[in-house]
Figure 1 (tube, rainbow, N blue to C red):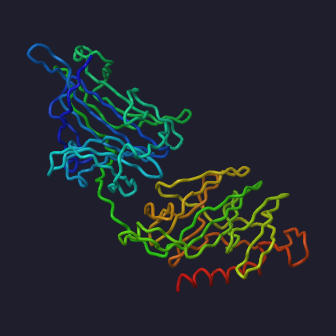
Figure 2: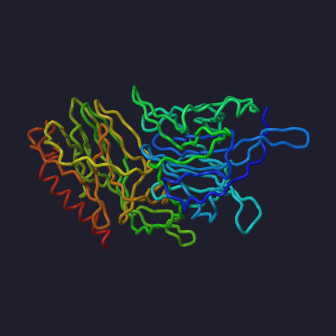
Figure 3: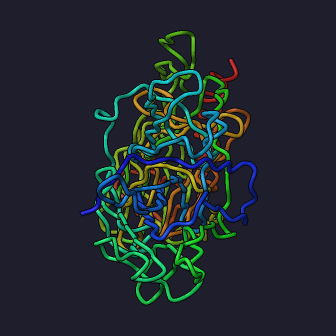
Length: 482
């Protein structure tokens, strides 16, 4: 049985070293323990890496195994590349003085618990931060770790299953933990009773593997210098040259201009070959504002409208804007709609997708940001859409939850995913949002009618669209401009 003494952290200044530099500990050691945790939310992961030097500590009467040195690192993996996170700019401490106590992912954000001794105080401090992996910045949060919800841990990243190099005991209350003990020979570690890995080359990589079917990818975290030497000591370690060191800074508030135009999928109705999507379109202005900070305000809708889109395998189509939510049903391959128009009238309309020409909207590539998504199957289509209100202010996307600003992201187009391709539904224009797809206008003869002429109109009729376009423009933008 080994006895563990408190860890002695070795100072290593990341800022002063290039990415390809070798990180050597103060003294080589006969036994290295490398432990890592891959905490995945399904699309990205935080990796907690610990590297410990073990040796023999002898007293007056006996000897025991002990930790002579240890270092901790926190890495971020976005599914394709590793980033080594340096918290020195935030805490004004060397990486060796920072202990990463825990991490969790919930409600679209990463949260990290950090423990350290501040330079001006001898009392150990626990702090909690929300980590923005887009800007590599953190903002402090006032919460107890016990009350912080623990998100679900995934054993995969973007469909690739995580396989560990060597299973180890749990950490932070999660799985996906690997624990490796490395020595140059059995004799060099005969005083240790645990399982030992003896390298067969001068370089020993520590990695986890991503597997999908017959495909495998190794994600190397660190290399150990296991060059054979007369003293049988592991000489040190270094990081792969592909790892990028990034300085974690304090997140700065991004100004949000009000009123703020926000959109959210209100409902999806499935057909045989596509689906109708109703978008809740609102203007939000600050209401109750504690401390006069608009980002802490309870937001109030000034105006609400409903935008109707049809999506199929060829892309999205815009079917108009309405002051009240349309009533939708699908019968005999035809959509039947009850529409409230801006002039106060109500019309029953039909819509036959077979009239449509090819969509004029091209798919776009989304930035790697944390958004909550939902997937709906409609026939042979897998439709994916963001579930929260997304607003657009300047070059930023604002996420709204429970009528408050949840976070500010780089610009992300409001899109609908169709079988893995993402098509934009809106584009920012002069402080508002405009539909991207063209307003479809097929021949009215394509639509069956069941009631008297003039009572049951096709939604794609030219006169209807002209009227809706003029009235909705006056209503939407006249109020905003005023």
